[in-house]
Image 1 (cartoon, helix red, strand yellow):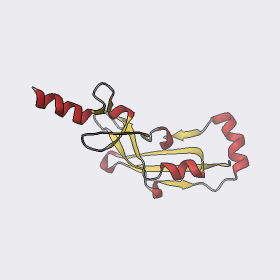
Image 2 (image 1 turned 60 degrees about the vertical axis):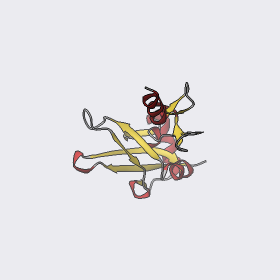
Image 3 (image 1 turned 135 degrees about the vertical axis):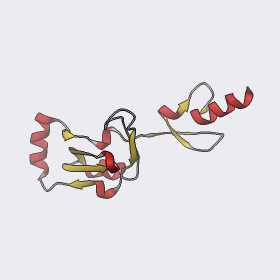
Image 4 (image 1 turned 180 degrees about the vertical axis):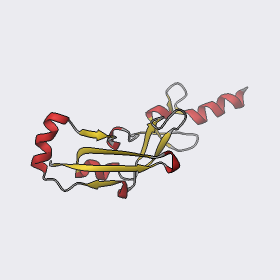
Length: 127
């Protein structure tokens, strides 16, 4: 599959924005659109930057795929800034039996077999 260069610009209100140039296939970018991404405290302590990747936040740069391939051999897939594909939270396919939410790995309590929110709530209800 051909890889292309993409420009990423994720607005974070008055805190600023996250920008980057990265390399990916059209399918990889299309799969990321509409997905939740968690960037962490990248704009300072307690900033907790996260949100849904929107179509207008990722734009293809007009550069032929052969050139992109050559430069990627030297620079890798992230040329500068943030590559949103590294921050997309993949769902595990595990559905919480209590709230019926499809959970990511970091939201899933393996001991109770449900999401952390429901697991906490159940523990508090028992006390």
